[in-house]
Amino acid sequence: MNISGLYYNSQFLARVYSAVATGWRDLIYSTPITAAHGTSQVQHTAPGTSSSSRIVLKPKTTDEVSAIMSYCNEKRLAVCPQSGNTGLVGGSVPVFDEVVLSMKLMNRIIDTDPLAGVLVCESGCVLQTLDEHLNKHGMLMPLDLGAKGSCLIGGNVSTNAGGLRLLRYGNLHGNILGLEACACYMRGSTCVSRERGDIRLRIYMCVCIQVLASGKVIDCLNTLKKDNTGYHLKHLFVGSEGTLGVVTKVAIQCPSLPKAVNVAFWNIWELRERMSESQTAEGYLFKYDISLPLEEYYSIVPAVRERLKDCNVRFVTGFGHVGDGNLHLQINTPDFDQAVHDMLEPWVFDYTSKRRGSISAEHGIGFKKAKYLHYSKDGSAIELMRTIKATMDPNGILNPYKVVC
Image 1 (cartoon, helix red, strand yellow):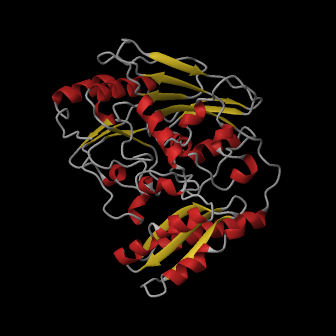
Image 2 (image 1 turned 30 degrees about the vertical axis):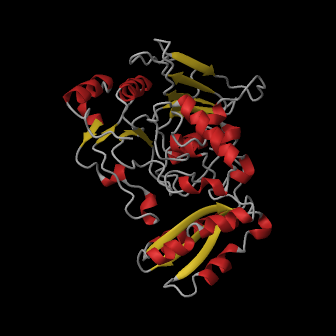
Image 3 (image 1 turned 60 degrees about the horizontal axis):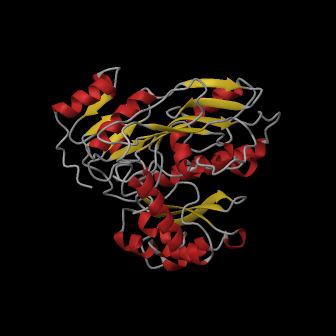
């Protein structure tokens, strides 16, 4: 998509200023944008994945998100929703000159209900902050990640993040209770949003239907544990990586805090976290997040070692979550080595596919794996994904070049 900067002018900034009511301090405008917004952990696996984006918008309310999305959709400006930038596949970083929509200022905890076991918050809340808050109420978050100190819940939802507690409490498809979605049905530049006091999850979509002039709200909101009525539309957005909408608020079903903790298991997890940090400290690290059937779980590390035996490789390791088949495969070289890269990709994905595994266990597809999606999804499934994307975002402005390309 060509967004050459034609609307990065006084008109654009005036519209943004009117949308972001808190003023210019919530607008970052530079050439190019800072590394904090233009790169992520994908840099460790894909050197050169940076952007020429010149603007970062930091809304504090749902209405501000609505106004920004309306203008960008009207002017066909691509938008890259961004959370904590802790992913490994480039899903949250701009590829070219997209407008970056940072959710970090939308960080309010809205409601905590210990009786129902439900937390309602904005998408910019840090995962660890939410977990510590819930602990005071005798609950905990159903997910726990190594990056919990910096990742945001909106990003977790958008990537269907897993982590340490997945085997016990399930993934976010089972823990998100309901949603409300604001659709930009447009003729001209109308974008309508609606606030409700009992909102549980709100997502912004750009759906252009030329015959309508006003916005419509898709309301699938409830907090029931059982609701078997029609299509469960919320599941479209969990794991969609910002390609179908922007998560602004979320309600999560939260389990009770355990009465005891297994110290030995906790120490093993701490060791696992330190292992990843130590391997990143020196040299270059190729990282792969895959799932394999349990009978194949230990096969890929020796296979990679054999394949790279003649290359300048320091070590090949694998660690992860044996209970759910998630393996973190890591290959360390003194510096980035194109020959090693070419030996690994797409070989790792092909190896995984032939064993009926997944090329992405918990980090999503993003930009880096978009062209390899066919190793895990049938062509008919990918075509259906493209149809859904085209229906919900016909102008293609939402996180382009990601997931389905």
